[in-house]
Image (cartoon, rainbow, N blue to C red; front, side):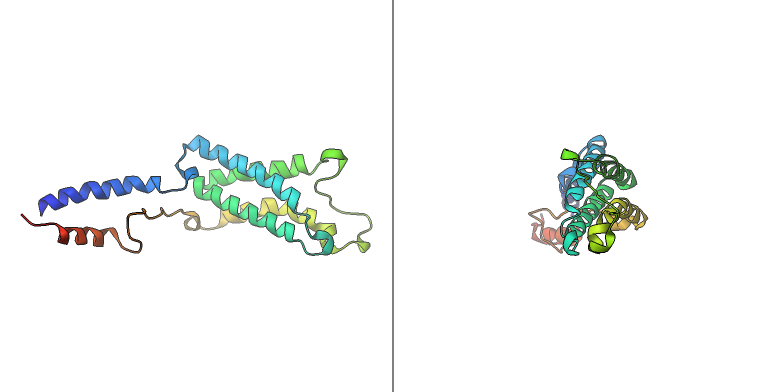
Length: 184
């Protein structure tokens, strides 16, 4: 019996050590690399969302804005899951700097990347006239709302090992293994 207890301890300890290796690759990196990823992803979200937010606005069906919001929400969730409020803050800095300074200005050829407030708004659809405002404020509002949400919503449970059966606790596996072991 004591031999079984000695054998099961290393298995339990190794399983706890393996929990870290079962996390997504970006969660296993050193802290500086994870924070750099949060910043770079924020910049990418700002660029991609700015390019997408006007799709469908001229037809008053802003599917591009919805896609940009979904992209922002997923990336923000990932940043907070990976590094907590610090990661979320870096993501917010990267995305809002990209949207508010770089992309809100003029893009290639002198065209406005985020056009807002047209003079003759009576002849334009509602979203065509206002989608730029929704994107400018939404890219900041989504991370702020996610910052106020409970921390437990942003935890990443480790995946099960490939050789371990799902929905079975560690204790029941150990007792099953003990029953299979011959007693001296």
